[in-house]
Length: 96
Image (tube, rainbow, N blue to C red; front, side, top):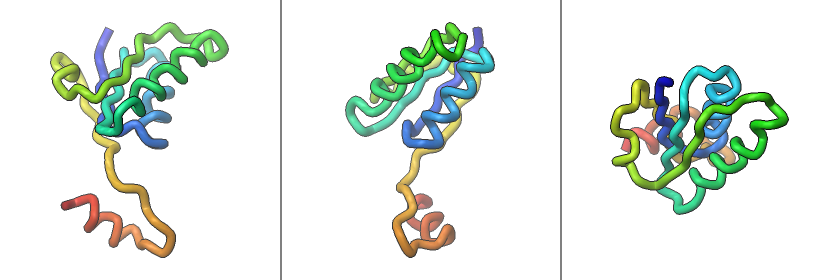
């Protein structure tokens, strides 16, 4: 099966991983710099699998070397928008 790596395990990254798993598009690797976040989101998706009827392999890690042999890499990482912050402001912060 194909392998998709998602860098960033926040709402967008975790939701993307879930959709990819449910559609059985590819095995999924979640990566995040926040210790334990990607592993926790992957575990949540794995525990939902019997209810959502998928058996896709999902893993979470902080180790960027795990993305070797990925067919697709999706970057969702970035600082979340704060109250009063425009999307243009957010773009400038994340571009740095």
